[in-house]
Each structure stands twice: as C-alpha cells, then as structure tokens.
Length: 300
Image 1 (cartoon, rainbow, N blue to C red):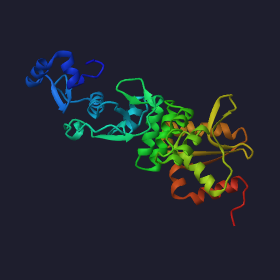
Image 2 (image 1 turned 120 degrees about the vertical axis):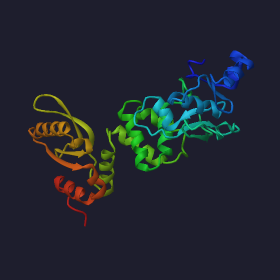
Image 3 (image 1 turned 180 degrees about the horizontal axis):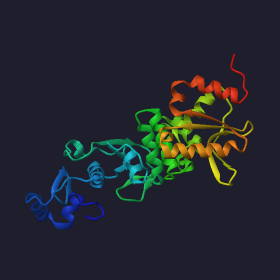
Image 4 (image 1 turned 30 degrees about the vertical axis):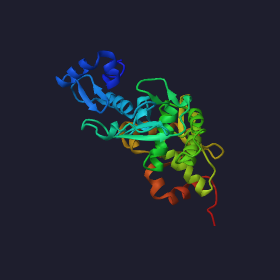
C-alpha cells in the first residue's frame, strides 16, 4: 500500500497496518510527516508531484477522484495547466475539512461536487481519477476562457489520448455542464480534422463570413508520391490555405514549409498563407483574400 500510494497514507490506513503506537513514534521522532489532518507522509521530505495528487485525493475523503486538468495529465495528456489540483466528490457527501490547512509544499486543492459520476467515467488507475474523456470535458468546462477550453479538447485529441467519440459519450450525460455548446462544436471540429486552435479560428471565420467550409488536415500526394497534409483545402477550387503559428518561423520548420509548398504548387494547386495572429486581429483582410481566391463576390 505504501508503494502504491507513493508513501502517502490516511491515518486509518497507517494505524491498521502498523498500530497506533508505531504511527505515533514515527511521527514524534520525525521519520514521518503529518501533511494535514488525517493524512500522513511515510517519510520526512518535501512532497513531490505524485505525492501531492495522493494527498489531494485522500484528504478529500471517500469517493474522491482526481478530475479536470490533474486527471487528464495523470492520463498522459501533455500541456495541461495543473497549478491547482481539482478533485471531484459526490454532491451528497459531507466535506471532510482536511484540506483547510495544507503545507507550503502542496499545490492548492479545489474540491468540486457533482451529481453525475457514472462508473464509465471512473478510471481504473492510481491515484483514483476520472477517465481521460471525462477529465478533458471537465477541464474544458473549468478553463478560464473559451479559447483555452477549445485548446484542451484539441490538444487531447491531437495527442491521441482520447477520441472524439469518447468525448461525445462523456458529455452526453452532462447536458448542463458549462460551455456545453462550445465543447460539442470543438469535438465536431476535431472530427473534421482540426488539430490546432488556428484551424478552429479559420473554420469559425468561414462560418461567420458565409464562406464554404474547407476540409481540414486533408492529404495529397506530392510529385514524389509522399503524403502531404494540408491545413485547409477547398477541393473544387484547388485552393490550399496554411495558417502559420509561431513554430513556422523557426528555420527548420520554415524550410520544411517551403519545400512542402513547392511540392503542392507543382501539382497545380494554389496556396494562401496567413499568420495565425492575423485571423484574430484583422479577419476582414483574410476573408477578402479568401473570397477572391474562391471567386465569391463580396457581400453587399
């Protein structure tokens, strides 16, 4: 148990394993730490990240599960913001009060209550946590902005840690969750091939402007028979649009982009390129060039 829980035990677990006298001796002689009321660290050093997750779950009491960004990160999703450890508990359960005084080497813990936590949303792993799909949905709902929420969904899908189908199954039983419409729309965009926020911005811009929607992450074969992935592609017009993020400015990416662009051009397609920031700061210019390339007259 000590190994499985990264050296973090509840007082009840420690007493059951060693007896009350042994637990008191280890604490009084400084071999162990009392992290907070009812939770013990079976060593005397600083809490490392996995131990902090265990403290959060054990201190939150029976039925508690890591949730949101913390659970998604534990499930392998990279790039999650985990300055606060979110823990999900059944709404009907009384609070434990153990989290009122945490040590300085412990991340803040935020306890969230839910009336919807079916068995299919529970991950069989350690520490106890929700599934990646439920964790990603919750993390998106709890994000500080709509853009950050969309980034959570797309990042998890791009990293292949969860599928759009799994996300739809998870959100199906959460009809009242915050950002329900945005999350569903972002999952749909992920199904269409969007892998970055810049591609979501392009789709949103096309919808607002009444432009036909492109295929996202479509692939073509270049003159050498290699598969090339296109950010956005209008097949009938043979128009390919690239939305360049900051990484495209790095020398090695810049060279790769130019070679890929040349290979597409030699097949007769046209290419428009826009920096990602332009879609947000000057969308009218982007729309005007898209309309011209697609031979769509400007709106009256």
